[in-house]
Image (cartoon, rainbow, N blue to C red):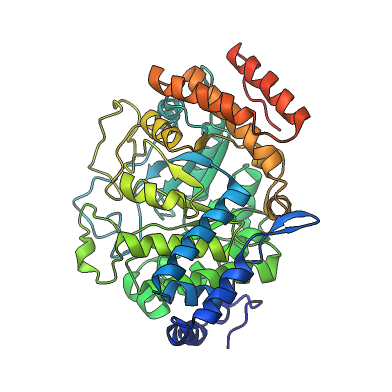
Length: 482
């Protein structure tokens, strides 16, 4: 029985409700009147508190995803862009993954880190190696990391993860500092989530991989990850442990995408119903080639057009949630979805354990990669590309450090007030990047962009203060924030 307020995985991700939603969507995918009503419901509206969006239920959003009427699909894409602009503007937050260890006791059939893979060398970073990786990332210009590790209670216990977080935060190299560490590790206990919270993490990220229970159990034949309920209920334990910001995601390509889409939104609805705040981010990774993994062996792959439609429909359904796209995707694909809802991207990423230190920008090891990186440009190249497209690459971590997390972040975002903080913060952190790390061409482009964007800050006092901060950054001072 479907119950979004239940704490049992099979009740808040109810298979019968997913299938009924997909049937409803199929029956109504050409119902123009209904689709236009759904689009109207989701459109940004001016209120006394600012601009607000109603969002959509998983059933309503599934109708949009099923719709193939060309002019209505174009309306969806325009609405997704309108919503993105209303709450995230032209800012794109930058981050990089940091792989700590590829030791893993699970047997996930889509991941090269699976226990039975004997061809991939196993590696775990020492704290000195963590330090060198962080310095290499700081030298690129990164301020925000997402740490990754396989599930292995012997090699990667929670104590190791906590020690790595402490090391990362402790390193100040030249003008570099990692100001936010997001964590993507296996489902764990409330007690361990409390420890992660106390360590000062940003977002706890855990991909469901697939919400289809039967498929999930086949794809995870052995290891702790085999337990569907324990994995699916992890975000509730994380929030019980005090973590305000959690990030959802599925690995598109493992199961039918319409099923995953509806269930993903049901999970978001569940978090909202139980905890009063939905996911801080949603990621949309697609299955990619890796050491002993052939994505062609899975028959649920999706093309770029379908992928773009999924991104747009997620943005319409959960307007205030950040959306992440990684370097799994090509430059062309990332370009397409930036306008449709994506608000965070990685740059200069390596998916190998120890993939940064000792390598040039155009060099990357492949022996311990978790997946192929399609976009292999350096961070500097990605930053310039974004600016050439009219976006502001943002290295901002201010909300997390000012306590604007969880429901506090969402309340600001839902009224559009977050723009008063984010726009100047993005410009100031971009200025830091330009001063400390950018190539001459990137710096020239960025300085022009900052001058233009400063004039768009509506509040005169804030605009004046932002200009003063940016001048101080030019003079060598760092870490200003609203």
